Length: 313
Image 1 (cartoon, helix red, strand yellow):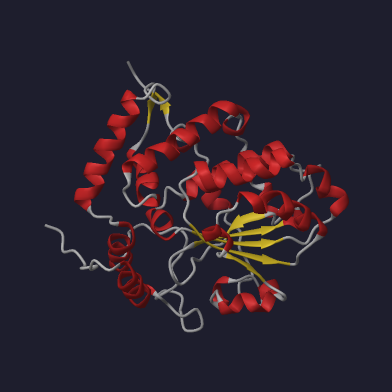
Image 2 (cartoon, one colour; image 1 turned 180 degrees about the vertical axis):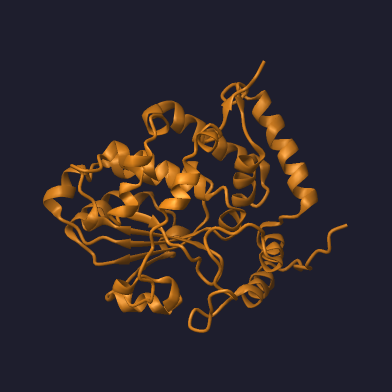
């Protein structure tokens, strides 16, 4: 039997206990100790315990949850022809804390998204996708936050739609989110997003349409099995203000509370260790090119497993 951590019956005391057990101070966190690389081969014991307490995750529940969600998929008209890999389904089970019905509902939302927007899931190009990294538009930072979260940095002002089209941007986001969620550390700890929304309104405002804004929100929040712990907004711009008016009504109160606006970039250091932030945000990170990870993530055998494949009859 797995040694389980007692969590108690009282939800408030449980939350307090979780906070005390797994909180880590960004000011004292050190690389190689509390701060781990984005790519990590083995789940550390600390995060195994965190997963059990926060997500009800343990070997027995994983087996049971996978068996149940696969059964639902085989008997549903929308998913019965699709073969899902275990690591894909496990993302949803962990994100929904092993509520199988909720996890499967989100899987179906992903299937519908893929059916309605097939162009987002085909014709992937490494040469196009890597531009987001080399031009510092969207990237996954090479070090995790002290609490294990994957950090995604978006520098909107670096995006030139003439170089990377909206369609390529959507495909790239599919790769970023789905492939980073293959990492158990990301499944368990979730994402922290830094949105630098400084923007050239002449280049960007015309793309700030209700359809584009909703598609990003719906895809990331309702279809992909990500746990979004914090979203940090820096350099508020005209483009962001227009987008915020459109997207704010869709956001849950829980998510709104996780959006943190910064009057200066330096206040990010209250939330992130200095060693994981790029120098332009007051950190010490001079290089954050993760092209090697992207090349591995976009290997043909990895893309073939992206979000399910036709079931063999």
